Image (cartoon, rainbow, N blue to C red; front, top):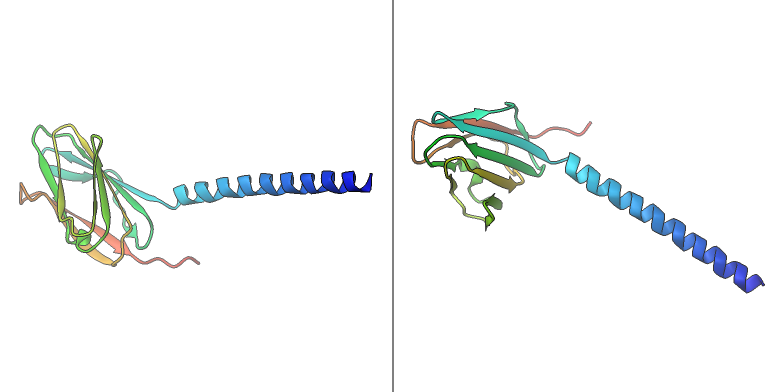
Length: 145
């Protein structure tokens, strides 16, 4: 009898630990998603348009969504990308690594860039196909007070 109670008690303890771990794992995934910063840039009439202009925080995973709403192809390049690991996704294709200098976005298509900014500063981005198309982003280090 005592052995059966110990086994049942141990099983209850294991079940409680498993439930705790499943909830804490879910919370960790949710906090990771909340900590990702997203920036959307539209390309309209050969101009970059930030949908919600703001600076980007240094060291946080970042997603830039670039939507080309023009009828011509555009480029996206920036000194911010030099030496940084970056991943670009568009139409089922993915390019990733260091040393990527830029991307092209076809008409009516979307490019998603994923990276973690490493150097603070003010960075210009531009279309290498149309030199007058420019924008800028600010990378800043923020304290976690």
